[in-house]
Image (cartoon, rainbow, N blue to C red; front, side, top):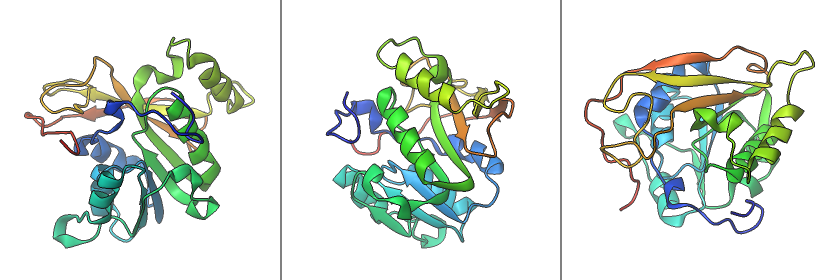
Length: 227
């Protein structure tokens, strides 16, 4: 898997729809962001929840896949309001510092690409802003030797002088048909991984991790964006 700055090879599971309930769990933690960047927005699953929660915010989506970008460009929320004020059909890492936002949110590709996404997000978030990434709970200590060194070196680089981590983790826990495990395929989870929102940025550095208690829908909806 190459860097986003080259031509990345995408795993099919990179193209998935984030369940709405996972995003709804996060909303109370986000304050009132005025500008939001949805990085790798797919067809707008995360954006729809954000638009309902923050109707006055400026929300920008970026997606490299044309079919998913087209769906995002035309996505509407409850009441017919457009989900995204702008949706870019491009590599979001190349849209420049003008994309600076109070909140940058993503369900990113895993592995090294997640780290690429994260570095770009932290370079674009405004001072005092938040970067929120949905990742397997073990992402920060994944023993995968292909990604471990680069990831750990980065996490060490943002560690606070007193030794506390430069981020916090909001683990998704609770009941439902797939406890703690969002379904990205519909009907069952894609893996045995548990998931968490990893929170980066000034407000989150050094904060203790906590749990977000979920009650997912009893029947999982179809999660694939496009058949």
